[in-house]
Amino acid sequence: MQRSLSSTRPATFLAACVAGCLATLSFSAITHAQEATSPTIATVNGAAITEQERAAHIEQFKARGQQASEEQVLDELITLELMRQEAISKGLDKSPVVEAEMKTMHARVLANALLNDVTENVDTSDEALKAEYDRQIAQTKVEEYNASHILLEDEARAKEIILELDGGADFAEAAKKYSTGPSGESGGELGWFDAGTMVPEFSAATAELEVGKYSATPVKTQFGYHIIKLSDKRAKDPQPFDTVKDQLRGMVVNNAVADYIEGLQSAADVQRK
Image (cartoon, rainbow, N blue to C red; front, side, top):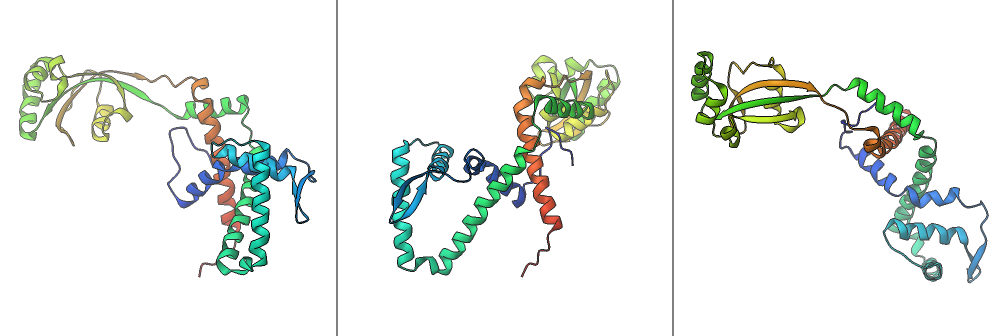
């Protein structure tokens, strides 16, 4: 499944989940940097707190844009462990609400670990990103247009001016005389623009014109009625690879994660009740 820099994935709940999971990948990344068994740095009523737990907690502070010393983090972990033990002694862990929340948190941690594993296998080397860049450039044809227009509030009046142009009237002079748009003073010149710059109706009509020709019928947009003249067009130079490399990397990783999740969903037996 291939996607381009200019495309966006539908704003579905899946996409939101992917974004949320990617935002918290750093929480699980520490597990790959630590050994399976981690040194004990404190005990609370016999329960061990490990170096790996502290490292993971520090990562959570960083993800929230906060800073804390190792000692401060350890103090917080000790307090959390004391409160955990006290909550269990009171039977709060048996509450249906608490059990549901713990199940969700457990699933989220494992999901983050899985996504971290998936993203580690995504090739985001410069060579791979350049290949994706070249593929998209080859498939994407973007043109720029140099055009002028005459903007009128009334369609009938626009048709009258088109008849004047058909009779030999100068387009720039007609724009200066009749156009209600700000470009009228400069003969209706808009300079160079690509399709994404203008409203869709205007861009579509411009793309259909031959160089040197003007629209045979008024083009209606939210601003009024346009008579458009295409002065020139050219292929738009793509953005240099180095300027979009980081965007490409994020897109490639996000697409890989989204495809992976979609694969899990399509292979699963899910019954909604």
